[in-house]
Length: 378
Image (cartoon, rainbow, N blue to C red; front, side, top):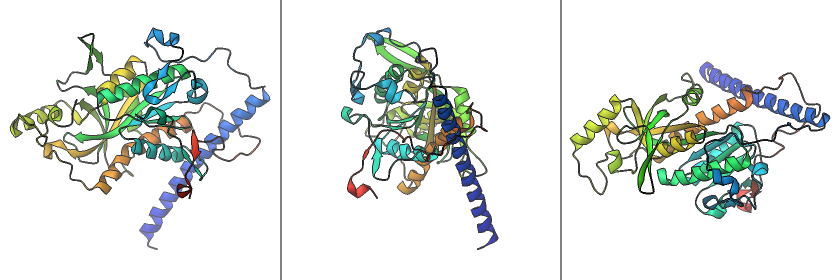
């Protein structure tokens, strides 16, 4: 084996050992805390747990039950505090398959395990609209395409957090986008969501009148996620910039390859160059609703997308699917690192405290599971 290969192997092994050590230490602290609580008679906080969300519909407390129709859940048949009360991160992306894969990936990254003969259960299967997977403190959901779809999901997820009495949940959208002046494969963390007029507001019609809500994103959260990028090891760039949210894929994004096009290539070029001059790094279709709804509820929110092409160089996506699949995992990697960092490096428990009894890592389970079909249980 050559010296370079040996060196790479040693570095990779050292990195994996470091990650494993962090996971084991965090699980040891958690077990120590549980042991201490058992010794103290499992004493609970004097104050009743309440949600930290604010500005919500005052009628929510009167809805008995509250039916989350599109998620196939309601407060009468589901004990929300018991099932979802430990959720700290809500991650969402466009397709059910992508978010199921992310659920398994983040489960591995935060050191949880499930039996090989089981698989994660789609909690919202009865709703037949979205997918929803729970992995410990992480909730993974698909949001469909466009602001109308993601706004429906967000309304019901926010109500879920309220009924579950979750404290300070973090919402993160993970997806793909068209880049503006950036190399394909670059990860863009949104600093602000703007509309086609460059206004940082999400407009909706209520009773026939226009209502605008500020599309604010948490700047410190964007910085924290950006810090999880390692320019020395990652083979891609991660940048923070403004994101334009369009209401469709073709004309709203100034594409020339739609079924209709009533503008010239010169007009498209001028518009995209204007966006670039205004520090817009990418275009997608969900960030306005995401930013507006999360900020209204006092939820820290971030949008992390990979650019699958540079729109200044063309409209059609010609990159091979195997390359696109690798690029799509880049935002997932950054977000998983951020979650792991928050869970394992911001723990207030005493690191020197160790549990008296040993337990298998992830013995408490990763989340809602069901038996896998025989052909999948390998």
